[in-house]
Length: 111
Image (cartoon, rainbow, N blue to C red; front, side, top):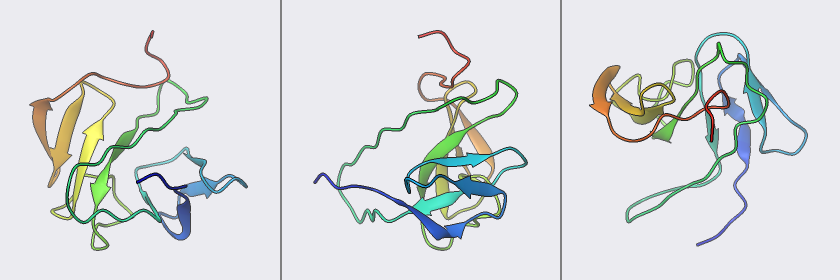
């Protein structure tokens, strides 16, 4: 299934800003998350993202979460979300690191 995924501007942490295009999200203070209009129920899915103009001192997590996940916390903070960290390629769930899962990612890494 291929669809245009948009960030839900009413379903985001207060520290995030949206671009006019509906898909760009930025933030400079603290951790919080934003949800999209894409729903996953079961099966195998993937998503792609592009990190634009980040400053090396900032960190990024991407992942999956339910409607119950706390948008004022990073993805992977509670039992309602799973996150993937830029540092060390670790997964997060209930604020616990799983150890390395995959590659590190971010705008400050050489590709």
